[in-house]
Length: 429
Image 1: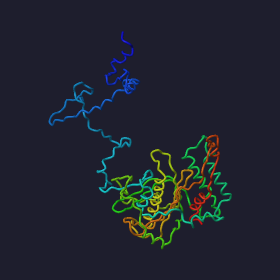
Image 2: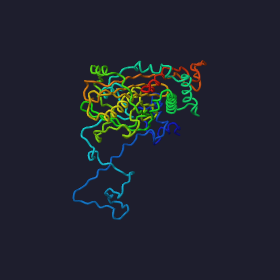
Image 3: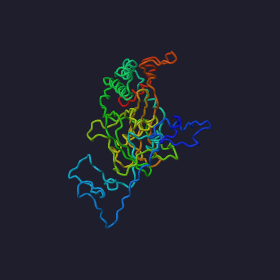
Image 4: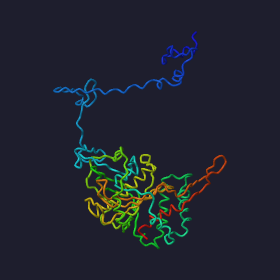
């Protein structure tokens, strides 16, 4: 009588040879591992079937079952011409090939949109916009929030309550999502700043615009670039922002050298298209819009997995869209012809946040002649990774029976809100 263990070795689904048995007659680890799973999982995946090649013989018609209106074994499958509807249905629309479109160009265009993540970050954005980036904000701009007449009554307490409202009070969940509390915090801070309107009437000459589309076109060297898409919350104003630097400081930018990132191409990670309009410049608003000047752009870090940007790429996005708003406005005021020096430089600000860390940017457009690396350059002042507070915990963080971080708001930094307030009051003081 054959033992049961020996019978399992001669199972029709398993084939063993002497090489898979050890010196003591036991199965090797690889064989044991295959015995633990079913045969369908241990077997190899069959290769995909190759499609049968269709042979067409000129002058020979294939006999099909098309006339019989049903399948007949041995007869070929009929081939019908594509059916064209007598009306237009957008659900079944098929665009023609790109070469047959009216806006097709042989020369490609490189497009930057709200989901673009450029490899070199701020350095690449500075080269694309011909901009010299300075670290930190200008002292005379930060000093606007240091004056007592420009501050809120009980400012620190009200800002901390705004943070607590966004992180603790404005939710029924144990822990609010980042996209929820970051948006709530930004709106709370804007609401606090707007309460200064009785003492600063110029604040009332502004309005917030959301979900507007921007388009700007320029040439850098021999390449054509465009900025398109929606770029967050825009604070519009009836009056333009004053220029940050005087004419002498603007002329000194011609001696600055743009930072290179060779051998990386400046067009890396930009969308390359062949169907586009060459002169595409649009501020997002009609000509009779009463708030034509862009004041400050507010960006939020999104939680969309398809559009997650690292901090360096997030700051590059801020530079590109502030430049795009300024360039679209310059084209509307001075025309699309390149100007080596604008009569009145255009200033646009930007603030980016993830609900705790803020990025502050001031951009001044001095020239629209962006083809070469020489001559006058644009200017930008960037203050990176400024924390508004350290922790906002719903529950205390305990490690080894010791409270490391207490529950509630901890580490509030009032100077960060001072910078936020200074950018808000810029042009109203």
